Length: 241
Image 1 (cartoon, helix red, strand yellow):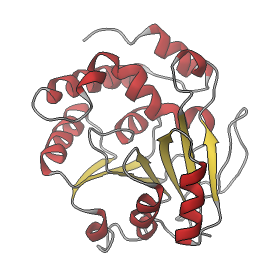
Image 2 (spheres, rainbow, N blue to C red):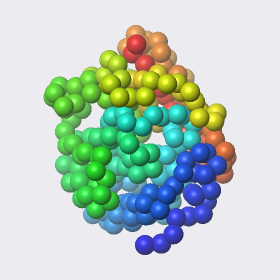
Image 3 (spheres, rainbow, N blue to C red):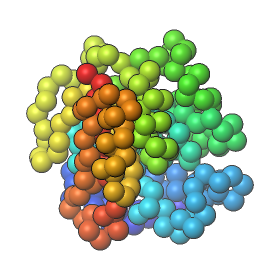
Image 4 (cartoon, one colour):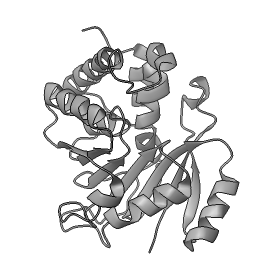
């Protein structure tokens, strides 16, 4: 199957993310499966196939490098595509309950097979449109975090995400707010949108159109990020409370 790239191993260690043998094996298998499935279905851009680790895996894991995300929370990966960022997060951050939502049936069929092969018991794959799925009992107001990676405009992502987010964290979710290292603690629940470019105009537009004022831009800067070409990548955190 191969060996995890040393640069990835070092980067995770520098940022307080410990990879055990099972996580390494699953990450390697996931990358292999992404490449194999991409020959049949466009799960990721074909120009990125040779650079999956830096362009997709590390970018998906980057919230763990800058945020103190508690375990035992429910996370919705909105517009999951090839399982990014949901699958890498589920592999590395044990205890998360992750739902991968995508409207394209071919993609969710591939995701179901990938999740089964990886043995990710805490990951569920759902096919459907966010506007419809959010009305169903198992999903409506059921998640502590919604995460979306390059899905659409911030206004649209906020509109689709809001019905999924719980009003308060569920019982059993750690309430303490003691950051580990220099990671940022964010009150649950929230939307985390991974985006790129100059976001000030988009954030301002979202505030005007939605009336939500608690929208913050978070720089994805961490030890080792300067060598990855992630300078353009940012996260937007949205609270409705």
